[in-house]
Figure 1: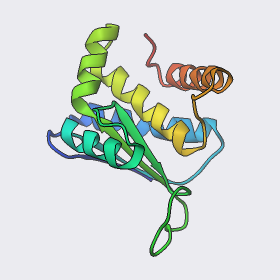
Figure 2: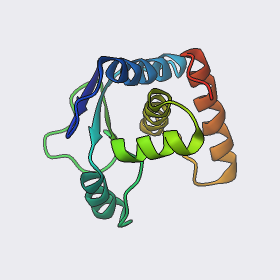
Figure 3: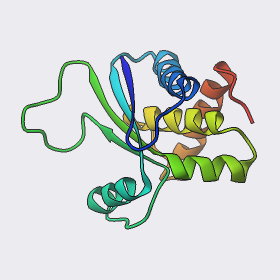
Figure 4: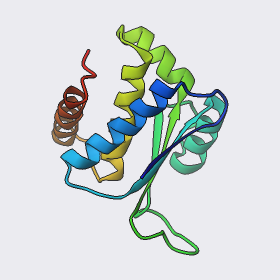
Length: 146
């Protein structure tokens, strides 16, 4: 199950369904199953979490919290993969900057976050190339190309 929530501004039905479809398609294409929660949050919330968990005191577009990382008190529910937080204001800015729709940007960020939850990263050039290719393949599958 992909649960999509919004913290400060209601998502349109299309935005919510697009995020859900992006995450689900990423899971399917990676032969993975499990539950993810996506929260579309405000800039200050994202900034605080980025500061507290990554020691980077600035707003970012997406943060992920895979269930297999960090310490838990009660443990992770069976099949729960993790949480994705998307900053709506950064998504709006980036959609304008890249010249595509907000729905495409939200889908991209949802795919990006899902791949992080599944263990992909982009800290070294080789990993970045692999992750970018997977993102492109998934976005093409759901019809969200540039």
